[in-house]
Image 1 (cartoon, rainbow over the protein chains, first blue to last red):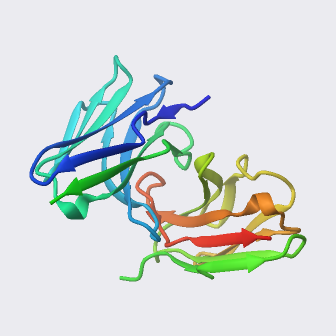
Image 2 (cartoon, one colour):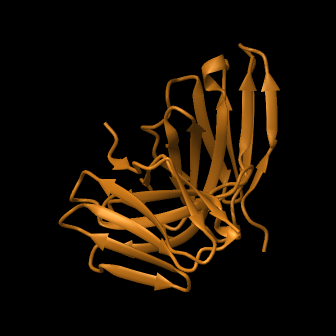
Length: 114
Length: 112
């Protein structure tokens, strides 16, 4: 069973509009959440993170929202740019436990059209 | 600053051969991770080290896989003997905290 699910394999958005990527997790013990971006033929790149004591974290055009009751995480990109076209992975961890064990979703491919 | 360095970038080998993948983490990062990415299973953690010591190898698929970290600037992932189902992209990542991880470009392994 997948502990981290990204139910949309792909998403297409017009340049300048908002991109919303979603992630659901199953275990309420997860307490640290991250988003990574991956371009073809490159490794994933850390984008933004949030701990369970917050419900929002913002970094420039990127905002991560956490809804603990719904076990739901989302990444908002505003405004979207063609360079944002990539695969986005969410990842979760037990920060209080083994710090190395990130569990990744399978990714959502974002295409931003000019 | 140099990021995580992996070699080789591509490896094609025949079933039964030994394969060694190499990784140089970012200087000062105490955590090192090995991941495998496949279409079916996505990105999976194989093993990780903290201060050169293996902490969790529960993701290593079987005894054919082994990993070492002889010093803070070098790690290897070895598959012996290799099988076609080992074909995947293998990533190495390093981290200061263990959470925000910085990935190398990956090694694409093809076992025929």
